[in-house]
Length: 337
Image 1 (cartoon, helix red, strand yellow):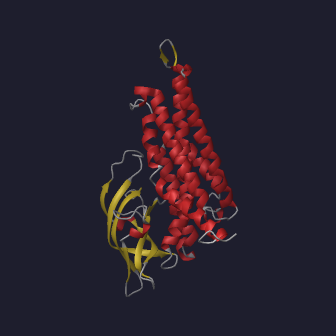
Image 2 (spheres, helix red, strand yellow; image 1 turned 180 degrees about the horizontal axis):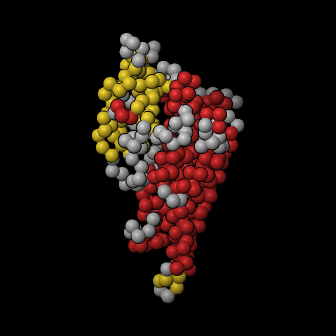
Image 3 (tube, helix red, strand yellow; image 1 turned 90 degrees about the horizontal axis):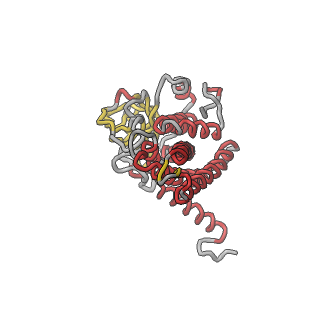
């Protein structure tokens, strides 16, 4: 959706992309997540950083649906801390690369045709890990399992090993982590949109239930306790929508939007969890059964607080950015006026 028409994409704006993800999430959170990851991460990464030669090789197959692509960063010891990545990329005498490592919790990992893998390719002059991104064929990986998750069960969350897997570099050596973090900004907007869609769908079910369910001789819509829950749900979701708009506009203008992406992702995911939880509570025992979609939305929404940067990580990004801006304005000791 986000890729320009010149390479075979739809050329949609970030706002259009988010509206599409939100609408899809109203019906299936897992499909919305798969689509968001494919567009923001799996298409966005090579689109922004791959060589022209690699782009010509992979587009338009990635864009027309011929290839499903996975984005493999997370490992047993690397999640919120991307620096914990242990998968290695080794340069061979003939100039090619091979990858070895263990990846975990990879969206659509075992259902994908191709994959983007973040790996350690050496150390810089300060001794810190040097990260690079690679394009690989999924047929070369060794599957371990489809991970059984609480929510988004229609998404193939996967674990696998890489053993001497051939890889083609995406972008310059040592720039993989920078590129990955930049792609995550767009990914977080997709997760925010997914969260809003889940919250909206759950609240719609709850409203219908309030109008039709009778207790103590009257509709439960007449109980103030439930009315207030509904008001809080709507307030949270509208605020989330308001926070999602600025980074979409900034993306269209070519401006950096990392801070705004964290605002949107953090607030929308927590608002969706509150909304789906309240919707389930309003629906009572019926809401907790699989006779209704509310319990699925409740489980799916919980993932949005974890995936593509947990709520705790978003708060770290926000606070550190604000303090860095304050230091630039007032000086590190606050003495500058």
